Image (cartoon, rainbow, N blue to C red):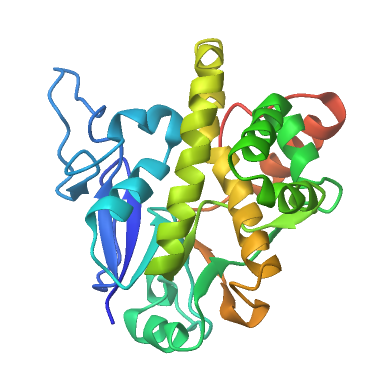
Length: 275
């Protein structure tokens, strides 16, 4: 069995040395230096083979997932980020966080027991997934997504409506799963996102760079829709899904993040940066 988790990055950064991980320079079609020359980070690039690299300013790390889906041959395929990884279920006491990133040895054991690996759910407590998105971004993105699902795959509508009312979800576009499941997910999600792009292309122009990255954010939420449907129709059972710790290689400013979260909910101030 072969497994690859791509690590999406747009800049030079320390990467795990374990062969499970494949660093991928995302947005390689857009990355230019001050002289207009393509930037080469020394990693695999998402503008080779069949790709959507040029969409990176709006699709975020999904251009890396698309590239991996179309160009990487592996029995298991997954996505992580240069600052965010799946963590070990058995963390060591260490000052080096990279020592607690999921290893190929532990992944192999998990892949023998499960079909899907996901990061632990993010809980919003006082917000549903829909209301949090509406307060921090633009509700019409999700409303239009629902219309597309109603037209393209109406069997997912119940899952969509159920997920929108949840107060937690698997976020960050992080997942790793058996290849047939990944093929099904990617076919489903990119079909929806490309239709969403056609419907909302004119709106991209009026948004800030941060808010313009909304296709990647919509996909974070609707991954949960796809997963809920697989559980509902019996393709997956809850015991097939393994939640793993999510490791951050950089400090998260939780105070600043908390203030922004509350400001979005109660003062209607949308996010304009990461934390």
